[in-house]
Image (cartoon, rainbow, N blue to C red; front, side):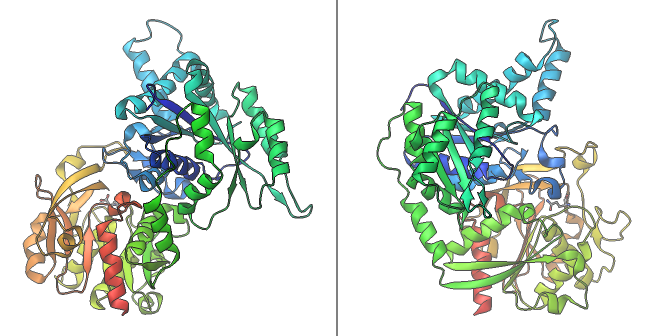
Length: 536
Ligand code: GLN
């Protein structure tokens, strides 16, 4: 083990969406599999304090950590790959950096100095990078710089990297992810955009140590030599990053390219034994050779943009592998569902999931989908707003409370079965004002939830403002919808079930955030199993 923490910076060139998060997570996985404690951090160049206030259409899913940070969805990949929880420190935005510097300025911490991008903003960035290392005593911290090199907004981050490369000479490297496009008219892979992107980094004083080249075709030795020569990197540090059929293939592909060896060499770390990837390989083996398949309908309002439900789709992959089953997800737009088309739109599904969400758009379609699942004995999982829809549906159609609703959608409803807690009402800002992060929950023995978890005490992550209204609990339980999970400290209902139905579970929390390759989430595993039983 080394004495000092080592830093790997991952930058991106040529275009966005090259998959820096997956490359960073894959490298981290390989280093972890070699016995190095590794964490990943993402620095995002936008001005929002966090992505919590961002529309999912803009930025995909908002991922939530145990400590209640609303973060970039890449943190989900980090957790799914590494099986180590992340925290607020793992995702920093420009907004947060400036907020902190401005607070310091107002307090007078800078003693009358002019506050500037260099050194004050860059110092703040460097501090945040080193803070993750200190918090977890990690051997290696991988810091992914969001955006593309050359963007105005990422300049302070690249400058912070330049300074750290200078200050911690032997402990820092830069992995630059770039694109080698294929021109079909010429029948050739082209290296020029990569040369330019490396030049841009050089202008900013940063020489990359490793180039990961996204490509649709094989990068032959000649091309690697050419890239190496133009970009001042050794030829073995030109890594081919071919398109993969699954993101979970990428660690093995990177290992085959010896990315881990190159990185360890450059950091001066021992290569120790070969990485232990046995469990990972057996996961992939099962992923690629399913024995069954099921189709689950995901009813939501952001289905055009699948990144909005990233953690849910990944949780289905993990739970599918546990059940040796391929889970086909059918994306269903809740706005298009009506009582008259519901039978045809949801025909042939082995299970139905109603997704989390905010606001009224598509809400009636979601409630109809719950009714369809409940009345037709189709396994059902409702997550957060999906659970709230299950509660509303039951009130309207079983308790005969015709206009039952959540006060989020209808303030004047006569039956506010979902309503806001007193504490939430006091908070007026939009950002970071929900019930966020991990809360304890106690399960009712023998419920579907307790059978799934195989324990009666759990902790799950939340992100919502509204809650089950306990004034109605007795009426629900008499009519057959049970609260099978409760917060032991507040009495808030966290899980509802209908025991007479084959598998009907609504959870106020977000199980999808905690599903990883090493630990597929028990609720998803049980849901897929119920869908499989239903199919048979
Ligand atoms: N809009 C609901 C609430 O705030 C549910 C939120 C969610 O699904 N994440 O309570």
